[in-house]
Length: 466
Image 1 (cartoon, one colour):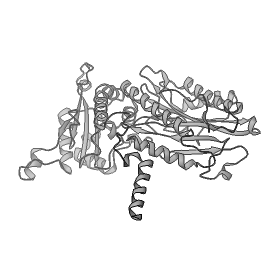
Image 2 (tube, helix red, strand yellow; image 1 turned 90 degrees about the vertical axis):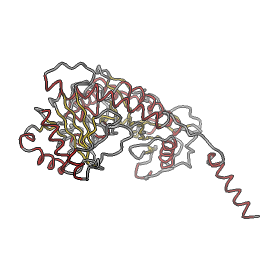
Image 3 (cartoon, one colour; image 1 turned 135 degrees about the horizontal axis):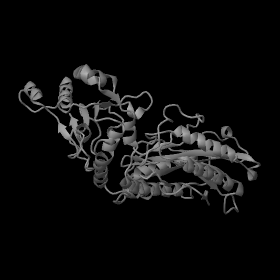
Image 4 (cartoon, helix red, strand yellow; image 1 turned 30 degrees about the horizontal axis):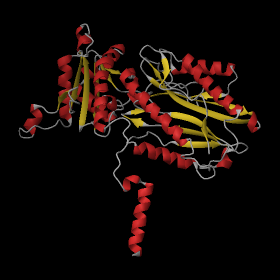
């Protein structure tokens, strides 16, 4: 009888803590089913290949772009080229893009038909590529059965494709500056060069700007979804910075970190980095607080969180204040500190323009920041298909004089950014103790070069009330 009672109590405990243990509960799907999400992503892919790629190939003077890769050693541009149902390359996949109109001197009708899309050893990606999975030579070698391309056979098929089209410039993904454009491995380059011979390898050109800008370029349709994703980020931050999650004197910063991870997981989504939460406290140093402090009334909280959905990423940092007994708002000094961080965001917006490099923007922002007496740092970055995305860096936290190479790329229309920065302000209510307000908010540079927040920025403190 006692054993049965213990079992029953255990079941009831599970039912209270996790209602799904006691009854069926439909999971919340903020962005629809996986199938619905995949259909949306596929429509984005089709339009990106049709409308963005041709112009970029011409901009960078490349009439054929060749991207070979092997399974589990994919080129960084891979996820920007394939359907949401494709998770890895085949044994070897060689993607070939050839601009027939540019090579033949024909006018582009603007429907995407100028650029051939070929996948040697890959799949058609839902009809978006001409898939070449076998040849007569390969079939003959295996007794007439259809077989996938393997080894040097793929290079021979690539050579046939090139010789039939006779490109003037063959773009390859090699770079010593940008990781996103350095996807061609040494082994693949060696095998391809040996098979093609000196006549064709002489036409190789490092396509640094092409993959970088193709990965970075976003569609208006993607922005519509991104706004919904950002709304979810704000909703979760608002819940995390509340009495729902925080009990002063009990809750540790690590509790908030794992709350975030669990919420995102329960929504069927992911994140591209481990979230972080830290504390600033009047009269207490960071060393005294330690790595995982218990949150107390009067604390300033800072979070750095992100969500990944439909291969797109967010990156957000917000500040909160834990109200003391009798308080209904943050002290005026903290409000000023947040306004100072907002002002640095304004300067970033005013200086970020299409055609400027990240280093040019950084220098202009920091000069104005110092002229206005703000004590801050700027370290903003592109975002989209990757959290730290393709495109120009606008500083790094430890490189405020400019970032050689990666900061020399230019801002382009249709890219997204994370405005990551901080301003430190003495707070009178804390005996002029400096308080660091770090802000990160994603923003859009649209096709016309206009800037706007993906949803909005933090202009008031999150308040934790008990």
